[in-house]
Image 1 (cartoon, rainbow, N blue to C red):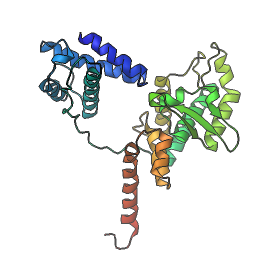
Image 2 (image 1 turned 180 degrees about the horizontal axis):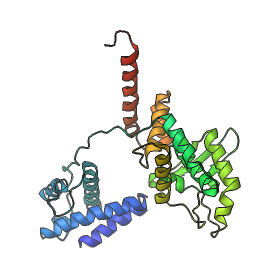
Image 3 (image 1 turned 90 degrees about the vertical axis):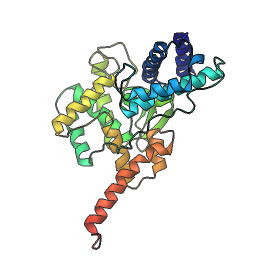
Image 4 (image 1 turned 30 degrees about the vertical axis):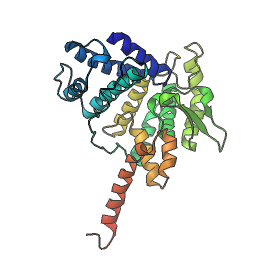
Amino acid sequence: MLGRQRDAYLAYVSVERGLSTNTVAAYRRDLDRYATFLTARGIEDLADARRQDVSDFAESLGTGADGGRALAPSSASRTVVAVRGWHRFAVLEGWTGADPSAQVKPRAIPKRLPKAISTDAVASILDQAGAGDGVSPLRDRALLEVVYASGARISEAVGLDVDDVVLDRGAETVLLRGKGRKERIVPVGSYAAEALHAYLVRARSPLAAAGRGSAALFLNSRGGRLSRQSAWAILRAAAERAGVPDVSPHTLRHSFATHLLTGGADVRVVQELLGHASVTTTQIYTLVTRDTLREVYAASHPRAR
């Protein structure tokens, strides 16, 4: 019974809510763990779960007391969110009359400042991505220029098709497809436009010749769409050559937002560019700029100390 109920909910979040394949896969792992927990307590139907069951499961996520791996607060919180969504769905479907998870809150996640690097460090990474001969450096430079110029997630960048790019002078844009398949048109600057133009003119055709006519913008050596994992590897390799440590897949996106806000951009504009559903998500970046303001004030004002 639990298996059928889980599959129905996953079909709902995939089709009706438009969640990404990766998110649905994460939900499946979370709900499988919860179903195993319930089964161990002799519960085979969501209708038989009680608030204490949900609360005990949520508590066990941080310690591994349920027999699973102990999770970090962010992963434990996501798991509880998935469980709560499943129980709400059960009520909507009429499987149960009450939601035992309604009062069980996800663990509070400590607010962390996003990782951002300096504009000089970004420039070094981009230069290293384009270093060398052949088609790969042209592609790699164009890819990372687009990520930094648009604030795209790596997955959004590799999801671009050729038709999603406009390189008309003064109107250079990319069409990004974010979470929930939501689309947004984001402008890019001259550096990204020039890198894209060089890649499209000199590198994409040779790469495409090895494949079967993919519409993807960024291609691998076999002519197919460049994978997210390969894009991450391109970024990490360029960062290593540039001598910039601790660069994650989101570093260029975080740096994009931080540099815009530091330069005076309105937080709601940055929200739109990043594709955040709520401005609250974007506001964590303002903490970075406030820290910068404090540092400048402390170093510059004659009576700051």
